[in-house]
Image (spheres, rainbow, N blue to C red):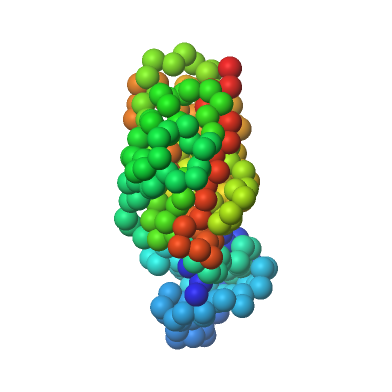
Length: 241
């Protein structure tokens, strides 16, 4: 089932008269199309990148099961196919996991709380931290941390790499809200291997800008997981300078 259309691009008609004529002629068909895309499973599963359709004055985007509309005239073109398969995005928070056979974690065997950056990753922004977190495929992890009084331009990274077992596509985002993945591209990453770079109080165009003395959440979820859990292998994470 298609979960969302993540991006569209639009080209305007040549003049307003042509736009009105086309809109009148295709009004009923377009309304039907919007309803189909919004509500019928697999309606756009075979959409081809670059495929274009005439739109009314609305651009429809499906995101996490909700439909968003933006006033826009012209031809709507799908430029990125929606993501199929298991999308972990249920609004429930995974608060712990059982540490068994994960020596990288550096914590005792048994339940490990992952509502905070510590204990697994130490006190933010501890350097060089590595760990395994088995992510339940229908939940997200949100590790709370406070940037404290770090100086401007202090920077670091959240890195992850392929685990040896239970591999999946992992999405990671830094946000002021637990479970929030709708953030700037600078503050998130996705893949079996990935990196999110952060920096304190500096807009440099390539890192996620964090404010001092502010609470944030390191959010993670498995967006393509063929197991009950997929391992998030955190690798050499923390302050870099």
